[in-house]
Amino acid sequence: MKIALIGYGKMGHEIERIALSRGHEIVCRIDIDNLQDFDSPEFKSAQVAIEFTAPSQAYSNIRKAFAAGVKTVSGSTGWMAEHCQEMKDLCKDGQNTLLWSSNFSIGVALFAKVNSFLAGLMNSYPMYEVSMSETHHIHKLDAPSGTAITLAEGIISQLDRKNGWKPGTLTAPDGNVSGSKECSSDNIRIDSIREDEVPGIHSITYDSDADFITITHSAKNRSGLALGAVLAAEFVQTRNGFLTMDDLMDSLS
Image 1 (cartoon, rainbow, N blue to C red):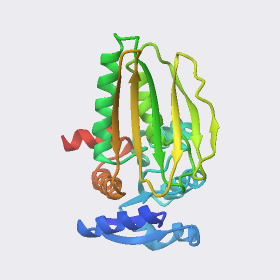
Image 2: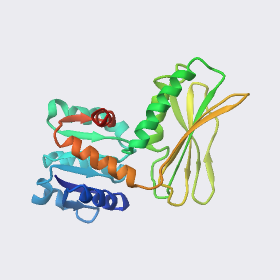
Image 3: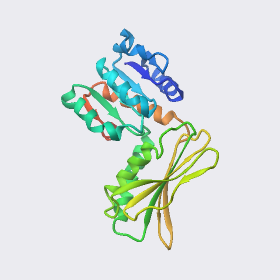
Image 4: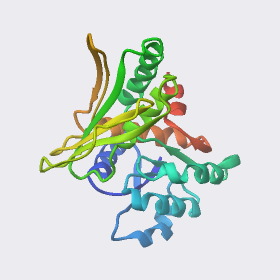
């Protein structure tokens, strides 16, 4: 398969390594200094583009990929809430194709299923108060992480006593703490930590006066995310429309 990379930082390099190991060809690499290559024959020859950039760039990048007629897999977070319905409309009837996920790790996808199941069990036990924390590297721009928001939405869909989430505290790389732990009873508080080169830790805690239960997913490196993104590209190659990680997981099970 011919793949174009949009974003050629650490994630882009890891995606390239895994894609090549699976027999794919990288036909174009687009980064901040060669955005004109969206119009290149090399980019337009790609069967799928894999996009990992910043929240401020993702929307424009995907619109450019659509204009070039290239199916796209995107793992950029911090922009989809504003543009989700537009993306779905642009992909209606298969006129464009986008598979977006806040996290492409297969482990995180499984963790999300455990998270939703546990929230369903906890619906009958109001003495347990739920909160969440996420830790990422110092280069991550959005907080809370897109994965944390997705996990919170999974809890909200199962837990009748919660109908939203709110940012809690943010611990900066220098140790400075901003934000607040104050949170209304119908919201889930998400605390964020930015530390060193941590690839990603997400923890959900149910706390009561008697005990607490915590489930955690910890990424060891970027390889799980990169492999998931390449698997998504392989999946998208023969599909059309607006797709999600659930569609990919269903195809793997």
